[in-house]
Image (tube, rainbow, N blue to C red; front, side, top):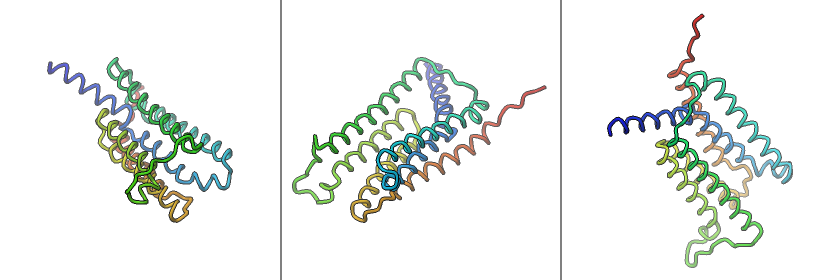
Length: 216
């Protein structure tokens, strides 16, 4: 039994090392948030279609940088990891949960913007709760999702990322409503913090896992 537990622990450590310990996942996520903080500003200048195309282009560039960095710096140090049945099942669950969150968010946003459904009204509640009921709901949803994500993969910093994204998005919406700010600086700060954390982790990764020297 103890041997079985040690194997599971080893698989978990390898999974976290190969997917999250190099810091580039954090940099990718932070870069996306930094771009989204300029989304309204770019929308005013480029228009809806131009802004959407720019969004797709930036995401493509970020993903390309992420994949190139892992190929150039990560794979030569830890090799190409091939997961077993258990870890592949865990990865599928994480992808399914992420896809569900994205699709659910897009579906609700579409229904709200087309007036198919209306934002909830809490009778007797504060006015700001009624004004930002949907945004509060999404903030709680994001925080909850990242909390579950952090628990499943055993990475504590994902709790922080959930709060940064949820609160950052809510604060940006509230500032845009009350102060008419198109630059979402709370979301920018949240993304910048993730990039800094990712950069620190990448520096530690390079230090702890030097590239093997091939003998002649």
